Image (cartoon, rainbow, N blue to C red; front, side, top):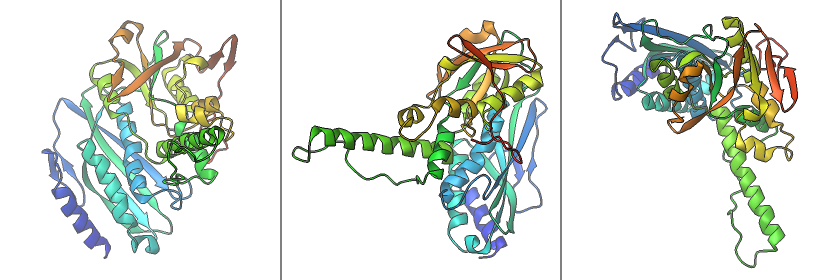
Length: 360
């Protein structure tokens, strides 16, 4: 199969899926054409995933990689309070990868997530490359002038975060320690009578519980769930005064938001929604859930601020995902602090940096 055969087949796969009525020209031409309405703004984002930097093929099933490639871009669109609409995906594969089922499994995961949110794959490019490179471009739309920015937080705004923190970083740690998807021991969570002492039964239940937590944390790293529903609600209901997605880590991304808004922030360590599975494994596998929550990246949760008068309007759940109040925006520009009982300390940005040294 050559490049053009594959593109033709991919084009046929998209024809059987739900298509946006405003897509005039999709896969097969030099560019996609999308009709625009005067009361809508387009929101565009792009993300690169590079083998050896963002993922390793030996530890990342291709279907989950396809899911993640789109999910990271969806998270950016959600952080703008916009709806994801159209996608472009460019990929570079080595010859041995091209000759395998990798590309088919990759796009099965990609299109599966696209179908969930009504996103149309409108085009892209395919190239030979010495390693796997993925360029994900996503276009969203939002009511004109209503995109939620990083630069509009104000002193007194309350700080919230969706979901839980630290799970993706814990999953990465486990991968580095040798954990893999589907590697459960296959044991029953209960032990039949006569199969050993109560101590042995308790030990087996603990192992089964740990296996479940390990798999959950691996999925947090390998198959993140973008908070599209929360982004739409926070944007369309005019609830968020500012917003950013947690891709580099809470410490770094909160600094980004404060720098753009020229404000400071104080968060309460006791209020951080630590990932329950990371907490369960803490100690037995040398994981510090608070450090992972503060500095671990790729949770792809939404970090947002809300004016005090609008806090009561916030829903408790969207798509089954809760939010947590974790702090308040202050006047001291650039100062991000953590309160932990009676202690207050400056929180330095220690999340992931390309070409930097801030890694877990």
